[in-house]
Length: 377
Image 1 (spheres, helix red, strand yellow):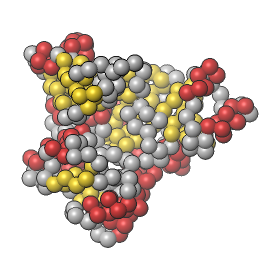
Image 2 (cartoon, helix red, strand yellow):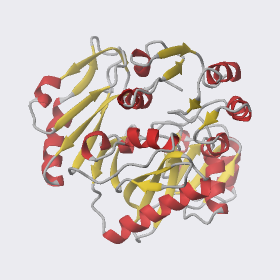
Image 3 (tube, one colour):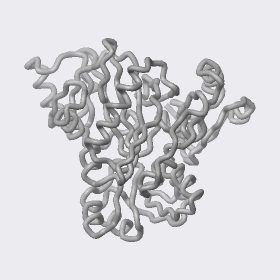
Image 4 (cartoon, helix red, strand yellow):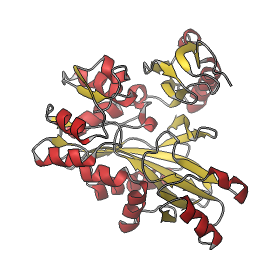
């Protein structure tokens, strides 16, 4: 369900196993719509659309959290296999419920409070219930950096969003990390090696990913143990991306989780024995989980729309980066570019991380996503 880039890459791997994939999306131009076996136009937030689509398939999975839960519950009750489970999705799609879940299960996470709207947050500030700096997250509908506001001082209070939200104490971050864990119905669990993420400060989304992460063995082992505990606590079937903070005191905290393939696993297509997309299929079909070992050190770059362009997409520098050994671009097939929209990614392989980083810097400065006409100010 849903036809974005994650659905497209899952569909590409499914074809290797001769799995018939149906996609539902609002747009017939969605990336996965171009390569699936059957496409249905529909809105994943609407009960009837999800329910009618779900009755046409044997197994239902998804690439986005914002799906009508009641329809998924109904389909499950009628015998349709839904992975991950609707109740897991219901918890994870609400960042407030996510944080409460971590608290209940003694999973380390940053201190937090829940508020109903902007007025309640302002009142809490007046009462000194909240101190600067802090992070505000919308409880629902946030993705790719949207729905997050970092409030460092009272001068930034105009960034506050309205609506139900989570207020988290700002973590003194040393590194942002991610572990992707897979679990099948038989109970087998496998984790991909820990990755390190670097964020675009302006867009607040992942710009570059490094694997293996430059951390101690102890940090990696503890991170993987925490990710497994999160998956076990959710009783997950499928894939779970667990995003982590390593703070400057050496503590590892869960930031948030996503019950699906994830941006922090794109590099696995070329850099690991089993990709995250193959692993998702193995998990939901209850097949043996694949070997997640690293084949090559790698850097993954998100290819983002340039900030001054909106319109019909045009790629500059693609031929130049294709000349570089070990550079593997993935263009998602989105027809319209917008500022900081994810239009593709590039995995850069090297014999060492240093070599991969050097090539990644060239790619970053060469490959640009623009439109045929710049955005008018």
